[in-house]
Image 1 (cartoon, rainbow, N blue to C red):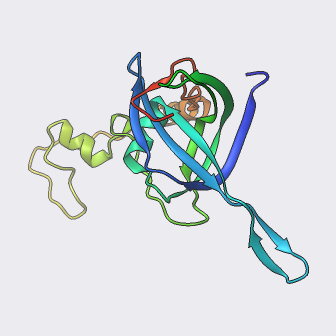
Image 2 (tube, rainbow, N blue to C red):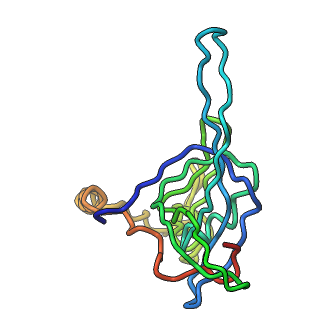
Image 3 (cartoon, rainbow, N blue to C red):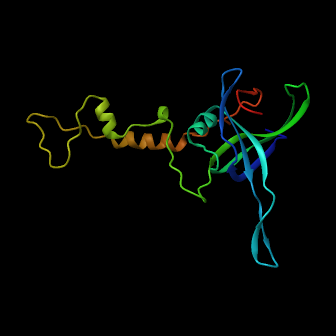
Amino acid sequence: MVNEADFSVTGFIATQPMKGHTKGGTPTLWMRVGWTPRVLDRRTGEWTDQLTSFVSVTCYRKIAEHGAQCLRRGDPIMLKGTLQVREFTDQAGVKRIVVEVVADNLSHDLSRGISNYTKAPKHLEQTAEEYSLSMGAERDPLPGDVAPIGAAEPDQPDPADLADLADLADSADFSEPPDREPEDEPVGAAV
């Protein structure tokens, strides 16, 4: 989009992430993210920490669902999103301004630790063994197994079919639209 304030930071999750949802039922995840810039002191040759800054981060849809399962307070993260400044009226009737980031991408910072990736269950593809089992076969024969008398040879894939699948995979667009819904305000998450 034009005229958006892109925001990108490497930092840490400063508060307990909180699940919620919008009035329309869209999943949300809210947290505070902090970062501490470091500068090299040329006189001493040592790195020194500057003041730590914090920003509120709201995630929507898949980022919210997945983040709720794997993000913890203190985790080192990399965040890319859109900076927003909005005005709201608090419970006492006082108008306030909040600066927040709507997350477009959020991940663990692998330069500071190890993270295990797990694909969302509904997107998992089957291995050949899982496919065979789901089709009712006990298992494919292993090398050295003796085929029962009269058993047919297993079908071999047609090389032309494999080439078509490779072309399809090369031309597929696996990108997803931004995972956000900025027009809805989170319900059940602190602001």
